[in-house]
Amino acid sequence: MHYVSTRATSASAARNPQQFSDILLGGLAPDGGLYLPADYPQVTGAELDAWRKLSYAELAYEILRKFATDIPDADLKALTARTYTPEVYRNARADESSADITPLRVLEDGAQGKLVLQALSNGPTLAFKDMAMQLLGNLFEYALARNDDELNIFGATSGDTGSAAEYAMRGKRGVRVFMLSPHKKMSAFQTAQMFSLQDPNIFNIAVEGVFDDCQDLVKAVSNDLEFKARQKIGTVNSINWARVVAQVVYYFRGYLAATTANSQKVSFTVPSGNFGNICAGHIARMMGLPIDKLVAATNENDVLDEFFRTGVYRVRKPAETFHTSSPSMDISKASNFERFVYELVGRDAERTHALFRKVDTHGGFDLSGAPGSDGDEFKDVAKFGFLSGRSTHLDRLATIRDVADDYGITIDTHTADGIKVAREHLQPGVPMIVLETALAAKFNETILEALGQDAERPAGFENIESLPQRFVVMPADVGRMKAYIAEHTGL
Ligand SMILES: *Cc1c(COP(=O)(O)O)cnc(C)c1O
Image (cartoon, rainbow, N blue to C red):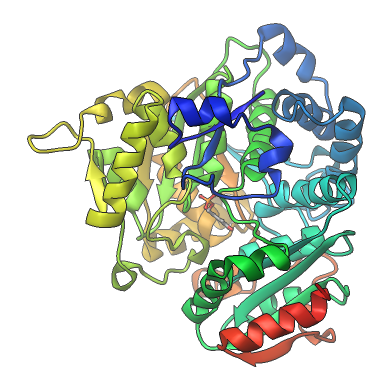
């Protein structure tokens, strides 16, 4: 299995065939594109039949070995078995089984169609990012040990990603995490989740500033290529290919759990921001999984909804990006979207490059086919099954209330965006699976607003705010930041 960049010329792709392990620790390809397999591995009906009986960890192994062909089977099997355990994904609802890892729950089965929730948020940080990040932690440790190397992950977070990365990398040999967050700007719960980690390889740095200051610091340090190389600095952002591929697994799992024969189809609705999660659904569909529709649900930051309705991709300026009550979807551009556009334009890397150059110079592109547009490929979007919808704060409150009243469970704000949009696309005979991307306890303020009572906290999180915290406070100063990193890596 070889990987190519969405911006590679055929000559450069032939010159630099990349294997899974080559791209595991990195982000963007050197040409600024994103990596994709040269061809999607296909699954047969016989394989799907056999996979119906597998545990989540066994299924993850079967799917990953199609992509990570340069990791010996026995090693991959051990890595997936260690990752996908009921102990790691232990926060299932009382009436669901942790052994299922991503349990399904039928909410509704009526004349309009079947509505199903797939729980992806039972991992240590109560959000779906743990599904991929926990595997990444084990893969990184394995790959670094194999090359007797080390890696210092340096990033900025306003919440979900940073904590998922820290819980994945804690205690891992060869890996340190330096995570910046805006001092006193995260919720008490999120702060406690990150800062209560006592592992010596985790460094929480509270920056005196806002999230943008943190991001600017990461950029400034990463732009110093000599420092970056010497300090072995890397990232774990959502464009990382291994994260995307780990997410492919739960689409298979959801399909297999919701059906009894391969002639049946299902659809998925995915609360979307950076297009990482739903991109994995697209890849599962390209591998031959019988997915009918892939519905992207956005909040008020509706870049993706606009594209899937009109064919116009228009990234937002910071001033046009809203702070919403589903904050993990507050994005101005969707960093994984290029992976789909590459497919949509027939894997034409030059076209893809030109379109995303236009994103940089003109803030977007137009594939609607209208006079003066950049192309007419929007007409082909339906072939890939994509649909979309958007949701607002008021929709979120109403949906959280409805779901509590009708089905007796509390859902988080991002999942509420998914349910709202999924209901607009129900189809009799095709189960609609909504991916639950976080647990309500993480976004309690909005739950309180919707229901007048607190969200339930999973066991072990009751007193998290009172645990001792380990962090340093620093000014937004690049020089001080570099000195801190160097001092703690010893490199
Ligand atoms: C990250 C995140 C999302 C968005 O996922 P993308 O892969 O960026 O589309 C949605 N919901 C929650 C809770 C998240 O943490």
